[in-house]
Image (cartoon, rainbow, N blue to C red):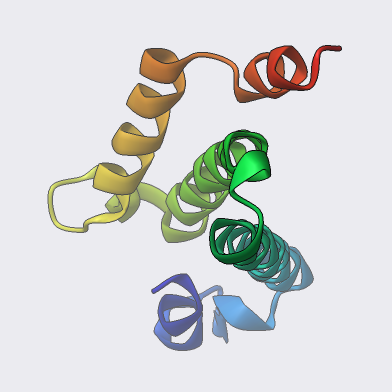
Amino acid sequence: MSVDYAKVRVQFGRLIGSYQAVKHGCVDSYVDWELTSSVLRYATWVADNNLDELRTAAALVRSSVSPAYFRVAARTIQLHGGIGYTWEHDAHFYYKRAKSSELLFGDPAEQLAERLGI
């Protein structure tokens, strides 16, 4: 959604996707996506092959996916600018959900540390 928007939005006579800071934000979001996908694949493998470690894998998923979701949602709001905060675009829904999940479920790093006995 953000990359598509960056390809069509023009500001100061240029597509915003041509600005280096916008490119970096999109790449950072992509890296978050790939890292969380890898953690999810690992947890799926654990669910199929090693049920004793499933709770730890689930805590690992939670500790990586939740913060990544919030970071990507925040970058999306920033990339979309003013329209991202309005009812005209869905970006604010993702941000609100990510923030409310963060507040509702607590700090995932603490939960993972507790699960690992650290």
